[in-house]
Amino acid sequence: MAVDPLIELRDVNKFYGQLHVLRDINLTVGRGEVVVVIGPSGSGKSTLCRTINRLETIESGHIVIDGRPLPEEGKGLAQLRAEVGMVFQSFNLFAHKTVLANVSLAQLKVRKRKKDDADRRSRELLERVGLASQAEKFPAQLSGGQQQRVAIARALAMDPKALLFDEPTSALDPEMINEVLEVMQQLARDGMTMVVVTHEMGFARSAANRVVFMADGRVVEDRTPEAFFTAPESDRAKDFLSKILKH
Ligand SMILES: Nc1ncnc2c1ncn2[C@@H]1O[C@H](COP(=O)(O)OP(=O)(O)OP(=O)(O)O)[C@@H](O)[C@H]1O
Image (cartoon, rainbow, N blue to C red):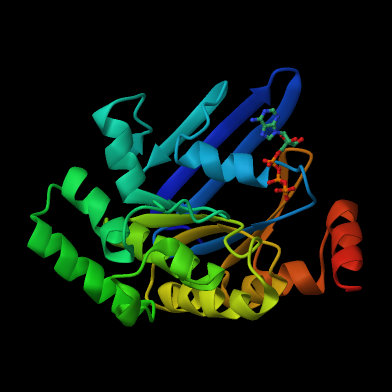
């Protein structure tokens, strides 16, 4: 399936103290693929996502992005985080900067764009996420769904090769979830490579090329959404689906 690998994890292991949180993870995300990671609470989904961005270090194994190993530190890390953007549950916007400045800032610092160029690009992206009229506002003046769309615009402003989403809708009121998922659906249709940790099974069914099911720090299943949702193979996945699909 993944003929042109963009993100590769080989035999990755991670511990928090005694807790073996990622166990022999092997995962390949091809260019243009959307991989949705699901699984019970505490199974290591967020940690997996964070290791790809090197927000967490690993004890053993290899992570390769577009043919290059993850950088260790310094300038290489800022470059990595521009190339592989991350969208968090908690938005992580700068409260004292306008929406426009939030989207422009890293472009000035990391991409070394001139302010006019950065602001022009930011406005284009705010338009793309439906927030053109909110550029001069501050984050606290926006709804949670709008703030998350600003965070997506900010990640896109770095012209990333891939985007990681760590439970991007979990902090949102129900009526705001869809406006964020619609932006993500559009990105998927546009061919963005995405790894999405989410509890939104509708998104997994409709947008994912593959569903990765994790339990106890392991990848237990890695299959198409059709195969996973209609005929899960493992007892862990069957149990998980029977619990969440009751709701
Ligand atoms: N910084 C940390 N220090 C110690 N333990 C941690 C840390 N971060 C996470 N853990 C533990 O590692 C395990 C995996 O956490 P992780 O957040 O990756 O799981 P998850 O599958 O994303 O869970 P959820 O769906 O609840 O967000 C959990 O047992 C968690 O308590």
